[in-house]
Length: 400
Image 1: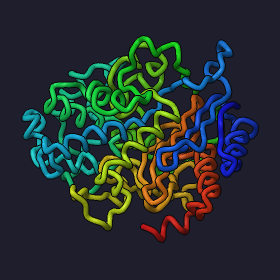
Image 2 (image 1 turned 135 degrees about the horizontal axis):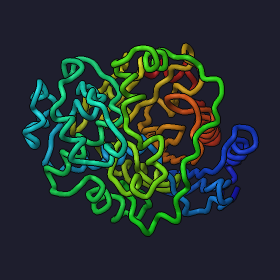
Image 3 (image 1 turned 90 degrees about the vertical axis):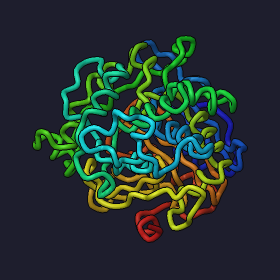
Image 4 (image 1 turned 180 degrees about the vertical axis):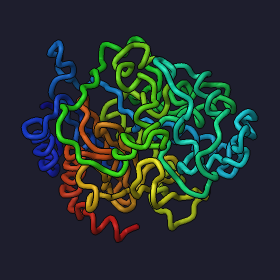
């Protein structure tokens, strides 16, 4: 474990170390900024267990759905410029998308996961997620699972393709190139959607979690036993990328904007610090307040994850299902915070009230649908170090 930490954040260092000593961490990075200034910069462990290569300060890894925040920021850039607005039908910039009852789906519905196209019904074979034209064509042809806007359900993969195609139709650039040229590149942080070849030597391959006892949840039960359900299609109709392609050059070079962003804790934290400088984005964690963009909030039963979730403007808001689903199914980041976690436990978020930006990435995936014990323990330690109440289940529930 290496890095630099403000003495006031000693508790964070302790929890980062406990993740390795007690919670099975293999390699990881953590970065915390206060008002844009670093107070925690930690990294450690093994980047590649097969070779023993150490996790270095510039090591990066795939962060799965934490990538969605980067896509959301691209869309917010176009909202701010007036090229898009939240009530605009997607079909206005992508006419083919209107097929089979999708003509009324708006940009806002995509951002809050209420569009009704969370998964594809058509079987996806090996390599299909890496084929952009195939994916957007199949999504454009599909009928929604529900009347758009009337309920919500997490869009684990389609989120990135539809919003990415909107970005492409408006700007002429892929979402990965737009993010690089308009956000990550000018601000100088390491984050890519579609990894350049020269960065490959720095990548920590994803390590699958050790098989063991898994707590049954309504989502897992439906995924296994209800063929054709949204959870079933989410788990078993996602091609081969998450299982095999994630650790290939082709799988990282492709643009899979909801899932295959490559960064580290520092890159995530810096991205959220930049988001806090946007007067609209920084208010996404306060749904009760209006802003320049009237972003609709989804808050309630999720038709994909089969638990309560909260989304606004392309980001997750603090949510807690631990009381009835157990550990790994909550993301307690503070009542005014916004962010996004990734499969296996990565997390990036910002708390505007505190000027706080956080990024945590790792190579070994953990259990659960949201944050597992490793990530949540770090979030809790950060709040303790700031003298703030730890985001507990009761406090989070009261805030929403």
